[in-house]
Image (tube, rainbow, N blue to C red; front, side, top):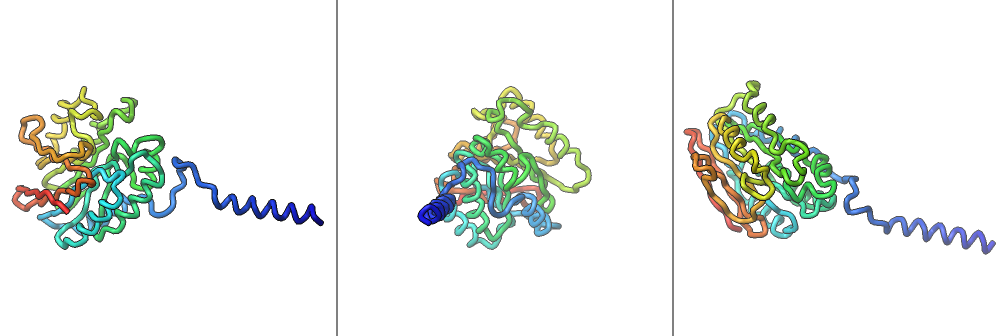
Length: 268
């Protein structure tokens, strides 16, 4: 009888201990919503269809700044004139599965659709795989009214030059895609040319290629954690670098019907 009681006690302890076991921080099992970019792109394209004037937020590098990102969501939700939000990448700090899920759940509090680019920190460990599950492909595009947004993985160093980053073929395919009618283009990326992460062997070739995009308006990027607004190649194409969200700043861009645009730096 004692042996039976001891066995039952041991099994009860074992079962209760199982509930206390934490998964490995890089475990790939994902709880909650997946494939967010594709779902939100459908919303953006539907909401903006036929619009000549587009107004969007660009923010970046939320990483470890959870409180600040929550405050950003509250601030963005106060605005009733925003069509969508682009997150410029580095949604995680160490590529941890829970980092992606935590930040996704915060960003899901936005009352407008958003998309997230791949950042260099998002590539750490198996972060790229987690990013793909939760958000989607590393290179993607979408239409917002009459503007095409081409969103690129430019984190060459994280891929150890094992494949073309940035993918110039993808850029060319987007430029030649005659299935989509649009009048102008915006390029979004995490890392800008001449950064430590960019493949600077192709920086000037990259610039010549993107300039073939239909009526290229400007480029937007994160990564540098500071505000940077530069005509990087002295060719009239402006690069707008967004600070990390820990600095409580983000951009609002307005694309006007007459092909002009304006921008604001918002502090919250």
